[in-house]
Image 1 (cartoon, rainbow, N blue to C red):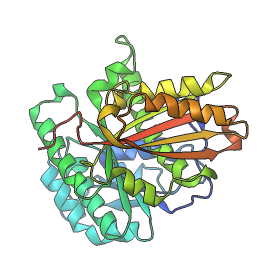
Image 2 (image 1 turned 90 degrees about the horizontal axis):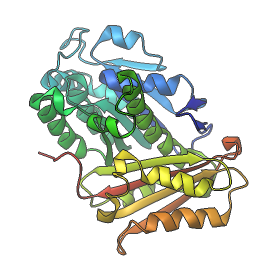
Image 3 (image 1 turned 90 degrees about the vertical axis):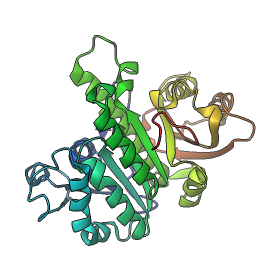
Image 4 (image 1 turned 30 degrees about the vertical axis):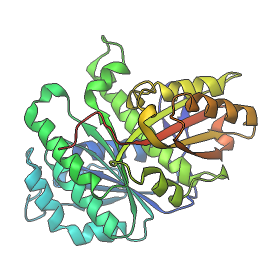
Length: 331
């Protein structure tokens, strides 16, 4: 199990319907893998990729790949995306081999620095060449980190968009929307990590749990077709008699959905509901109705419903939406 908040414990799928690889690239990517590897039982393959040999050695991921053994010589990329890109290209064949057989590859990284910004687009490209549907889960730098890091992040995001079906972007400046102003910095960073983890686990649920209404690869491809490779994401979970209303309220209130304000520009929206055997039809209707109030008439809604007896009366709602607009401009 993995704890993703004070009111939710999530169990990942034991037998995924499709094969999936979660690839952490660079320091932020490896940090996310630690969170996943620390508690998810029966998770898909976790692969750590980094230029920094020492950081790679400390990773709990069962598979590790050192990038740029000659280019970076076991060190970090020093904030230089060009070095990170060259390092990943040096091991391009090995990256592609790691992705062989995967139907979905989730590439996780922090953008703005060297390894994540430079290597993640190469990893995504090789995963796509290996035949996988590639999804990105990335963080974007604080505004206070300076224009150079923001430019590097934007350039990397544009390159990722060429290989990823969609990219879930978490802007670090939005940490202030999910923790109180007086919260410790460690709590804010943890909140960002939790948000990224929820995005990854939500994908695992969609493709891995027993389903009443299954979301397949065709639906995921259709969801993001014609978008600018940007994905809005929200997740909520609640228990009790009003669990459906509370869970969808949490999901719509996610900073990555901007309190639902991003949905009116969405063309395709996926709503995924997870519950135990007590899940009621009326609860499904309630969730769909709440989401529909934020959508244009032209929006196409994909519904997935999964059951998990270990939900312990908790109902989870995940919303993923494609859009032609994004919080960070593409160069």
